[in-house]
Length: 178
Image 1 (cartoon, rainbow, N blue to C red):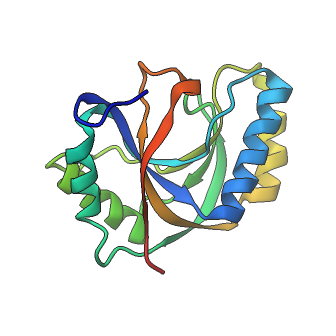
Image 2 (image 1 turned 120 degrees about the vertical axis):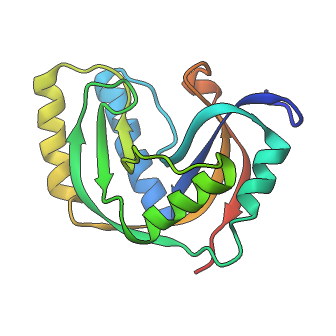
């Protein structure tokens, strides 16, 4: 269980609005059952798991809330990757309000803007035989590509490479206006 005044591993996630959260979760759960992979909460990572003081991180994230609005982004593709956490994902363009939020978040939390932002919502974690994964991607690509997703909140999540997926836990949530 994450503490409140220690430097533990936390991430900052941008979360889809409820209808999209349910749709993405349905896909994740279906793939987890179909391929024997982990279940997880679908999200768009703005800052990946790093050691932070939770109270300080919450203060920095909340400092961005005035004037921050919900973000609307179209899914540009459903892509496959070789990384455990980027095995199969909905890809978004790193532009507009999403890129602006990422840059402000980086400056507020890290003090410097990251140069490697690839906004995505993972739909499958882990290794799956390439042919089966490609067939599943074609199925989901036809359904999701071009759809527009609204992201309406930020979450601070106890998570990271050293924290088992089943132990990830939202510890703070912040609503974005509009």
